[in-house]
Length: 312
Ligand SMILES: [Zn+2]
Image 1: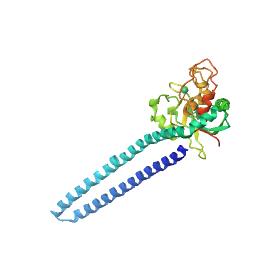
Image 2 (image 1 turned 30 degrees about the vertical axis):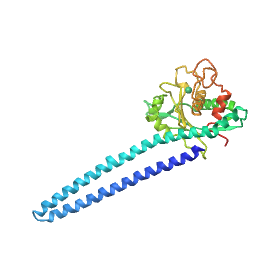
Image 3 (image 1 turned 120 degrees about the vertical axis):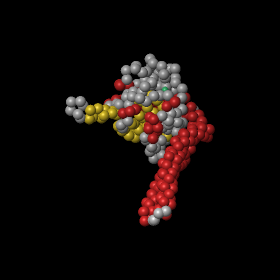
Image 4 (image 1 turned 90 degrees about the vertical axis):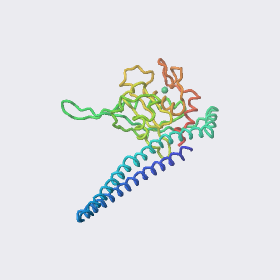
């Protein structure tokens, strides 16, 4: 509920700042152009004036030229910079505002829903996801033909998503796959890192910006499929609407989780299951040697009461 109000407000503020920035740019251009025209006119007049008036006139031209340069510099280096800075600062403020929403939701309604769930009321709910598969272009050295190589094949994706559905069925949650798209971003195919310090890093900003928007007001979790991550099998950054998973077929690191289970674990993290389980059969585990596909009642109820899980 809180997010339903907050997100449109953020969108309005973002649009407002962008429009103000565009207006400032236009005004700046107009002012510099006007000053330039004035200078050109004065220059022409100067030529027709006799000495010593022409000398004075040339001095005036010089003054106008200085004003022209200063205006240009202020427009480019000061005003535009300030807007850019405001936009970056606002991103941090939105991030904090979303966490405030999270707290308000827990205090007002979520604890009730959690308790009802623990009491055994588990009617069917949904999680919407959209899948974005990173890819790179591979050119054949002999023929020169370029083919797109995604981080996972269709068969691999299907296997992952079937596993995700199977695990969430334990909590009476259905997975609705809104879309599967192959996107580019080869620069992030093997370079993403799972570390809280990467919040606001280049891939974090890109993945946040390109995450799927909510569908008919229902939240959507974006699953970015990469070939491999530098230090993990998957990752969820607290406070975002997206996760990263690797394609285990591409990594030889002997990770304890299959990709489907990795996606479930990362979604679990997004839904406030922050800690890992020591039980290797639990899907939230970080221990090898088990099935890593089980969710217990507490975990189900935390996930079910989160904002990503809806009745519609
Ligand atoms: Zn984890």
